[in-house]
Image: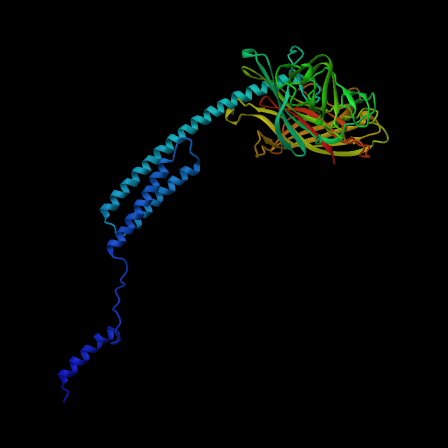
Length: 515
């Protein structure tokens, strides 16, 4: 067959089409042209709806007491919603305009909520500032009033007597732990006298370096006073001890009352119990045979004995320690007196006060450093800047430097209280108290400055800037580490008062151990 030009054009015109179809290999033509307009619009509309929903939730969460992070989240949600609208390129302008109006309305609600929040916060701050101003003024007066307070020596339970013209002492009882201040163990105390409008309450914070109770055998020689008891007989560990009639907090057992007074019948007068944690047997052999409960412990009437179990171990409390802390009294109108306390345990075998016969001898000449902690009360009350008023309690570091000379009167002590923390906070206000060098007073067995709170024996610095000298301070030295082989006193505890003009007032106590 003869091929004509016409046939050739037809044939060659078909070839490109075949090539596009896979060259005759039987493949399926591609239809992947991306999301359709309708699909893109749906995706963009969903993004706008989700973003607006999140913005509505975030704006609704902004309240008068909301944190800054909540407000920030609402601002961010509004921005995200606007961005979602802007990114919706395939959504008709009319829809985007309507959505923008919704977001604008949310933004207006947020603006109003933030304004209400600011007003509420301003009001709350003004109220808090006013309350703090009143607290600072009251505590400042209480600290000043406490300068003349006598604080009875603490023997485990502090007794506070306020002023020579007030004999209404409050006996404070140990409560919950106050945690540790460095190596010093803290305890909270509280007490009350009177009732109604005449009620006076007292609280105290007490820090000591006492060790944990030790387990020791309950044994002794016949006729010897052991652990506050008198031994009546001795018989191979089955010793019988006579109990006194004073309130005793070491008496324990389920047969003793927890309220009121219990009278024991004849068949109830012998039972198991504990004394200072040691197990044994109590027995009433004559007399009234009663036991009365009080905050001071169990008071027995009649003739009572305690027989420790064979091998009984009692919990022997550490009798050799020193302590320091603060106290405060309140009546119905607020704080009336605030002060500090310090000293050494007075129990048998307790810490021994280092007296003048020790200081000022050839055996004790040289320098020693003591480091520890401090705690107390402070008040900042500035009529010209009431927004800066502050008051409460503090903790701080303490360092004392002793210079022992050949004569007691020439021996000196100085120190620094710094790294303050206020009201259990972590911020340091930049305070430092210099305890200026003072000499040993052999009459009072202490290092002491002039006794007037208006003295000039401390220097209160703020941010490194010294203020005029003020106040007073004092300290006693103790040996509370028996048998440590050192002639140098183990510990020093004391108190101080410092102030800045009429705006800053502080009273504190400290305890430090030999480095």
